[in-house]
Amino acid sequence: MESGGTARSPLDSPVMSGARAQIRVGNLHQLAQARGGGPPAQVMRALRDHLITARVPRGSIRFAGNAIEVDLAGLWPFSVYSVSLADQFWRTLCADLGDAPIDCGDDRFYPLLHIALSGLSLHEVPQDSLDPLDPDPAFAPCQATPLLRNDIALCARWLDELRAGQLQLAFQPVLRVDPGDGACLYQEALLRRAEDPAESPAAAIQALERQGLIGRLDWSVLWTVIGLLEIHPDRELACNVSALTLRPNAWWRELIRYLCGRRAVASRLLIELTETSPIAHPGSALRLMRELQDTGVRIVLDDMGSGHAELSALNGARYDAVKIDQSLLRQARQGPAGRETLKWVTRACAHRSPCVVIEGVETPDDLHLVRYAGAQAAQGHFLGRPDTEPEWNFREPCTVLNRLQEYLTDQRPAR
Image (cartoon, rainbow, N blue to C red; front, side, top):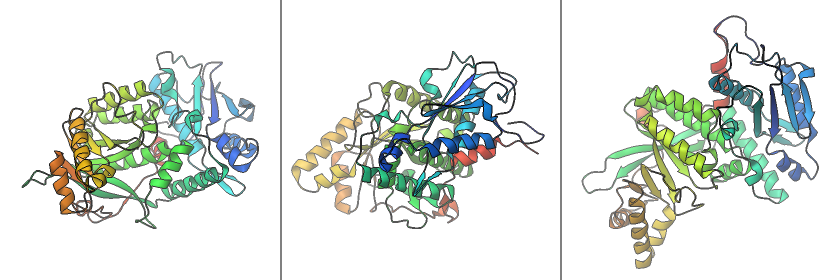
């Protein structure tokens, strides 16, 4: 936090009386249900011990039901108060407490932290903008115990591999389909495990969404792609972001400030929004999309025709491209009814965006169907397979950087 001198905790200097941080674990009830008991006390004790290790006085910490409250008197690390400094404090607390898993018997548990700051004279900050990475877990569906245990284990495996640098990106082109054109519009970054690149991440992504932890992966992929755009000024790259992550908070404000100062990077970044989960706050999502587009970022509606429909039905949303799910192309292969459905959906999408992309092109006949439907671009193995070592990246694999750890590294004082 400081520009020089001895390293200290991010929780180290005076603050006004009455200021506090309340820390809740949003997916604690899911762990309790999976284990068949009450809220695991070791999770809250582990968070308390982590705070003490960060030199928060034990007397400043108290348990309040299933939450921890921290009295910030004497702990504010800045000499002034502002929204940006509160954001920085909040992000550091989230990253410091939430990066590593907590061992709970046979389970490795990644907590979904909800941290609320109060008493800091932040009246100008909207209430929802100090929420953590993802929305309230009250939106999570009730699940059977076996599925919960599998979700917790799957989340732990993928987030462990993220922290160990064992997740990579593969890049697949999106091409124009006009005869004689075939230009590459951009390349989509797709998530892969280094240990087994052929394994689909779909099950893990769904588990992370159900646990409310998908933002941790989304932010890591997003900042990794931004780093690539900085290195390769001739590339245009896209990455996927879950609809659950599309909610204003301190992480998004940091990104928008960063991109506002780097328009040449923002103009080459595309964010593909996936509809695998519902949007908790459509109005906030729409405002955030507009703020991103104001920096130059292009917003793509992904997998149109599958999953939830909140994004496609969002009034006032302006998409720079719409991608039609490959399931509609599969239906078009079956006969005239499917072909006409694909054509109708393509025309409907054209009213929402200047560019319509059809996914799942695997054969020359598929490409003919794409042109028949009237789409401008396509993506699929026939046009280009995902490449984990693209030529433009010097034939080097691209490791996904753990954003929480990277953020903490960025905040370390110079020596």
